[in-house]
Image (tube, rainbow over all chains, first blue to last red; front, side, top):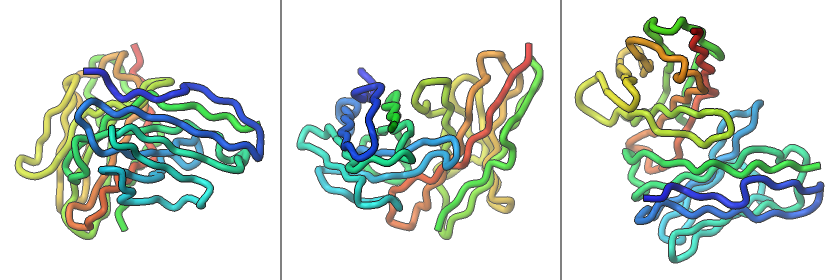
Length: 114
Length: 115
């Protein structure tokens, strides 16, 4: 079974631009979560989707948004990029949003904002 | 609110020696606990989890973890460390009763296994 895939793997943007990141979950997985990883703040939860519905959102400004499609693929968007948005963005999938299910992570998208 | 603490930023251990990576947690209900490992430029890999039952949980690559409810701890252990175990280790928790599916991670512990 193929793992979680994320595209692109690397991105370089400038302040004020917007960016869209894509995540394809493991086949059969219907829950997708997004995390931001930085050296200073560690791993921070962005949001979780199940059946095209956002079920939970972390403490991030409204510039960060996401969606999930009917095939469980997910995208996240960051508008009006700031230098502090430079991070590794990780997508994770699980069979369902049941709390006891482990999540499987993709390799991440490394975003650099100049 | 749920939280996780990994009190050591870095752990150094000699190859062949036992290793322990510490984790303590705080939740209002019963915890679901997870350990993940991250190698450089890679995503996180699931190692093991505690949901209920036996306090000693066995996982991938010879790792195990012991759940201690009274000390609210979930330390990761391995009897004999390998150089290839050198990586960043994350402990994570979910509150089983909160109705939230958010995983809260610790800051991570860098494990270095010295040949």
